[in-house]
Image 1 (tube, rainbow, N blue to C red):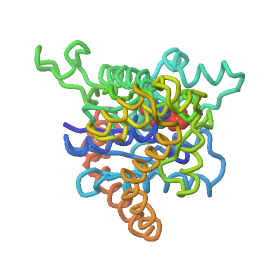
Image 2: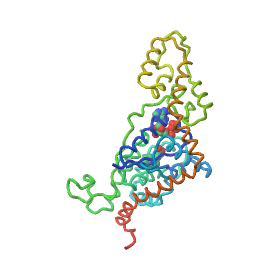
Image 3: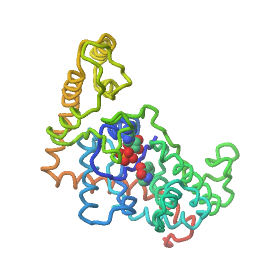
Length: 340
Ligand code: ADP
Ligand code: TRP
């Protein structure tokens, strides 16, 4: 099974990103051949500074490696290092209906917010389809917001196969049932990360950069302390039982605490006797106990950027090796392959 996902860099990661996405992605490296890439071409639809682009790209690599992605098992690479992606993008764009792209959320949302979208926003899902189809991915772990893009990817693969593979039967894409020829592009499955329970932010709304309510995984100690101590609480007196839904403290503690400790925390919530400050200190301790190894590793990696670059270069080489036979088939199917 080949697992692939792309991560668009969007700055500092918070506990929502970690528990909702990165942790699951990294654990997939034990389940099959996995490829993760930094979608910097996609990010270019909003980043307009070369220095920022470079540092955001590097941040994703550092985050993944610090949090446990093992480059001997998983392939980690930059989208921009793979020239076959824009090539496949073009082939797919020749079969992509405008109407399908006009229905894409990313484009519709831009329009709704009153922007005049660039072509890159409009064709964003086609580039994403190229990212996935180029490597013949079986499974693509994504958040809910990306499910539509996966449907578009399957649509484009089907349209490509129907256009360029004579006899291709969209009802039997692998040809197993009818003996019809197999498609050149494999249809991937989205895997929605179910455990993506919403991680609450310091104000008890969904944790999100845009709400400024984050607890950041790699912020310095003082900033982490400030974020955790700043968690909003109510005026329940120390002796009184605490409402677990009144603050994000219990849900956040649940993410970190061992089952035995958690039972104890839940009991004191029910019975009262401990103030909110007690739970904040506990959360701060658990945050550090859980994440300090990754935080230390990230600092070490930052001191050895040559190593990080070498990982990315090697990742690109391995990714291109996986892509090579697929893009060859594509070129033969469309008639751009050089005569050998
Ligand atoms: P933000 O809302 O901070 O901009 P992103 O949209 O960049 O975060 O999220 C990247 C990924 O992290 C998403 O695909 C989602 O799966 C996950 N994620 C973000 N916030 C949360 C959260 N509060 N709870 C669970 N998962 C989250
Ligand atoms: N669009 C995705 C996001 O914003 C990132 C992405 C680009 C991606 N190409 C991909 C995800 C291919 C999965 C597969 O999160």
